[in-house]
Length: 179
Image (cartoon, rainbow, N blue to C red; front, side, top):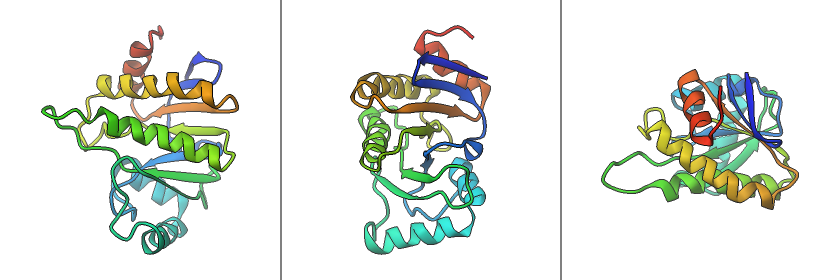
């Protein structure tokens, strides 16, 4: 199921590892070497070459791990997506506003995609799993970033791919769409 908030932004429920796009975004952990949730699913679907590529990134560019809000690019290996953009989202803290860090994940992924002339990008819900970011707050952040950034990148087609219908419905609701 797909809903478009404009002609270039789509909100769907699905498995991001099956999407045939230029790049999918991975909700990586700090180590870049795989983990649970979306990160684990992407690593499993991409095959062991992804972990090796991430280790090379650690060795060359990020010896202390990928900081929150930063991005890194690898090939997609066995994924239908040709590339993976890795980003580390913030851990939610109700006493500290981390929306800027969450926005950085989305914004920097779009900038990196533009640098590599990638046009179709799929994002999962960043930080809403074990990092605890509330779905509604996260949806407001991602939709604000897309509203600001998509006009700067007219060739982009962006898919927000949620694993659960609940997250999809929340994002659609925040976007003002009816299901």
